[in-house]
Length: 138
Length: 80
Image (cartoon, rainbow over all chains, first blue to last red; front, side, top):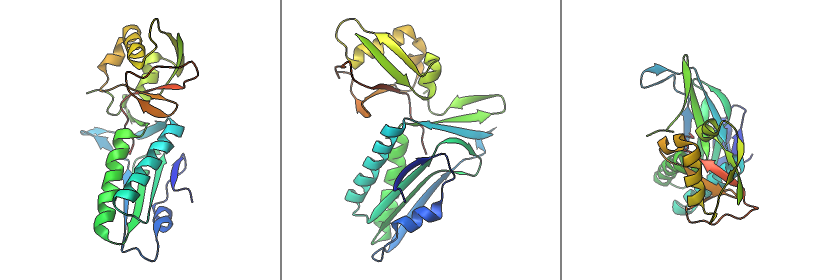
């Protein structure tokens, strides 16, 4: 399985979990970011994601490498969905494994926080009466 | 110097196209490109941030552009 992936297909959290398991693991932490049905009370119909793919993959790889080094993880997988994503579907899956749970929790949180800051991926919220690029304006 | 730029997300909407060329007179820095873009498309100034990538790496405003560079506008990212 690709450890770092951008795809228009549904993400598979179980497959991501299986990809990081190893005999020395004491814990696997998996974060699944899903599409919420509203933003500040306004109903969202679906999301649309786009990326600058070659750079997004590089930035995702950097995050995984940094997390593996900082928290001495066995491994980390980051998969991100593109295109039209429906309510309740997975937008992102991050899975990581380590000997002890504390490191895996910290690494997983670092990875999603950093992804939201540095990886060139953009999402648009589609409403009944229009659409908005998320976080574009202060 | 003529700089070809590629835009994503809201930057693409502001340019009304995915790719365009920007003419910069004088020193071809990212700062000069930013200034030229804002003067032609004032909506860029309303964004929470506008970063630039050259050859798939973030660059700072003092980066000097070369004709072969792949220049991409990075408006505020919102993955996850």
